[in-house]
Length: 272
Image (cartoon, rainbow, N blue to C red; front, side, top):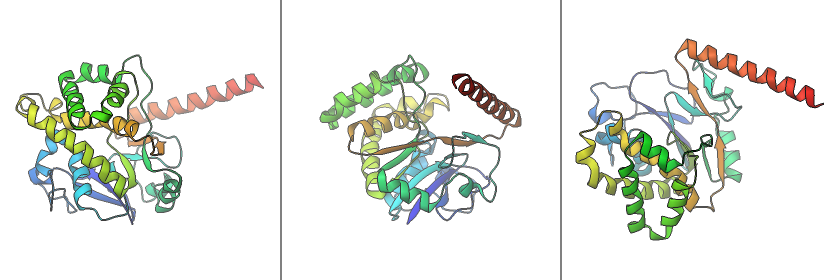
């Protein structure tokens, strides 16, 4: 059985699929009922959603799903199994099949791979660590490293290398994998983040709403660390497909794609 949960925090069109299940994140704090599974049942951290973001769904899946294969999407972000498109402007009745989000495709990939995650970000001149320090609070990442050193000393040097010598990361906290691997990742992740929370939460509450999402930001970098630690895992990377609601931005995206195709065609022609 495959259960991929799509995080929702407000009313939005759902994907018609027998493997994608909507989940209302932060439902414990919400004054609306979206009419489907919330992250506030059984063992949960739903009330931490303003600071843990989609990780409240990750935790709920970890503690409550009994499926063989599990995963996490967002209501406007999915993994694209069919092509390299990174944007579309709608969810129609054929969305899941159009982009290859099917039980057959996922099971076939997981015959050869252990985990499916988004493509890495493009290489930059800035390391993952330095970029985080520039955009957020570098002291939070320093604390993460200290906690890894204390709790998982055998992984500390790997974490340092992944964060301080590498410029690429995996965003959005999206993944699909077998449940036992998901559970191993979640157990490790929350063991670190809950310890971080003990130290910084009073300060987090003084930050603006964006920076209060700290644990979600940290976990995006920690996914790369986990995969670097577990070299035995075979990783399949796929593009993130985003639902672009802004018509002007979507037109620019399509024009850029057409331009790139034309330039590629001309370049290949010149080489022949």
